[in-house]
Image (cartoon, one colour):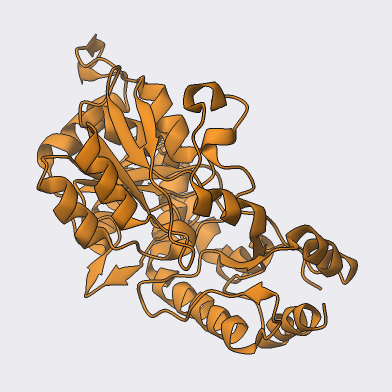
Length: 364
């Protein structure tokens, strides 16, 4: 029986001995914040992503906010993003004092519509772009970077759902000026608690984020950089992530296998499935679309099959901030939020379990 769309007990159990050993190593060191485990993980993750620098942080939302601050984004600035990705980018933008500007999405991929992005860049001032690799699928980030850099606009990659996704040999996070990751436990590379990081090949941005993550210090107790906070990955989580990083590509491969199985076998005429993708997709979430989404969700629940909605409300319709976006509407975004449904997909899921989900869907 499937307990959730991502069974973390089954995910961590096979590596429990290695995880225990990693945590014991931290206990024995007596150093729990910004020690050798953090330093080693930052070096290893930077190498994995193919960049020069990694700066670890407390969570992925901090990564987005501090990346924007490092780029000089603050009051009076605007940041172009999408509104179907759970508010994380919007929260980070608003935290800096800037305002989001939303591009619509493509119905087929649910990623940013580059034609709409180009129209916005041509008609108004934009100070940064956040490109979200939603559900583990890389957006056309080379084209987005080309369009933005031609206008001297920096690009932030939101890679919170795309650890290890790759296009023509280049990893997520290495295309733009700076890439942001979350290590929340359900992510493809997830810690045993909160965690995040930025990656970049720009030494100036890495240094600014390092200072911002610790009060804006230039030296101990000397806060020279405005916008600083306390956002540090602890040693235990860094040690845990070091155990998991070498396993990531294998886990991603298995996620893709499950996604392919779903797409090939789900045959209900009222359901739209994602296309089959190669290494540019790491299947963080497998998301289908159905006009009668709530009915399908209930039908699955009656059979003991969990599902979830990523994400039900466009950012510009959220009660906390919709007053900032009066009249805003992106038709493809609004429709997607009303139709998306996430099915179970995690590396330890069996083919038989996937087939059980497929059979239930096809009998709806």
